[in-house]
Image 1 (cartoon, rainbow, N blue to C red):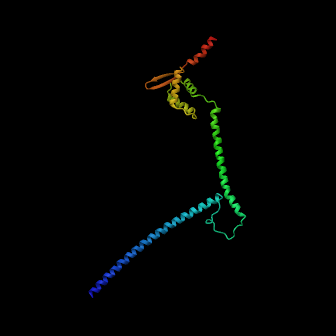
Image 2: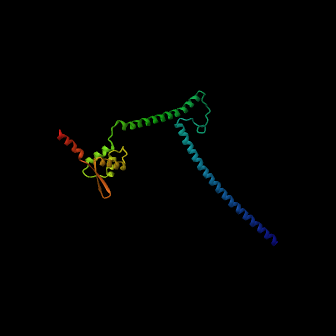
Image 3: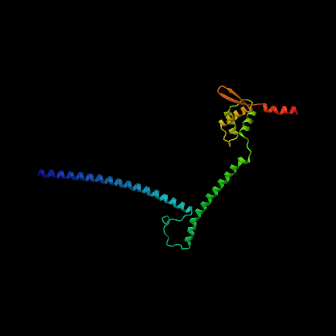
Length: 205
């Protein structure tokens, strides 16, 4: 009798353990499926929202209304309306093409005056700009200072310090400017010799 009770107790314990394990597995599976359902619901809501937005955009653009967006109506329009749908579908393409062409024409027309401007307007040369700036100054100026002033006065011209320094050295070589070195810095001033030439000419007359 004791052996039968022992075997029965062991069998009951095995059943209890099996049932407990099955319950845990069932609960975990329910949680997993519930999570999947929640995720799928969110994805479905997102897809439905995107679908609605896309349908409204399609209607706003004049495109054909999709069968999924609008359920089939029992009253089907006659065949004469079919060409009108095709023409409606073609109109946005033509309008887009003409819009792109007009935009391209505007860009080309906008660029043409800018390209012709340097030819039509006689702009002073860099040599004249530098010489005129030096003549207006009462103190020596460096190449960097002259470049800054001329760049602010003429923003449409790409004036570089190296080019200004080379131009100043050419003016010095032609005695149109003086070169003064103060330490490691070099400063330039305008010469007064060109201004004296008209006076000598007037005295000779």
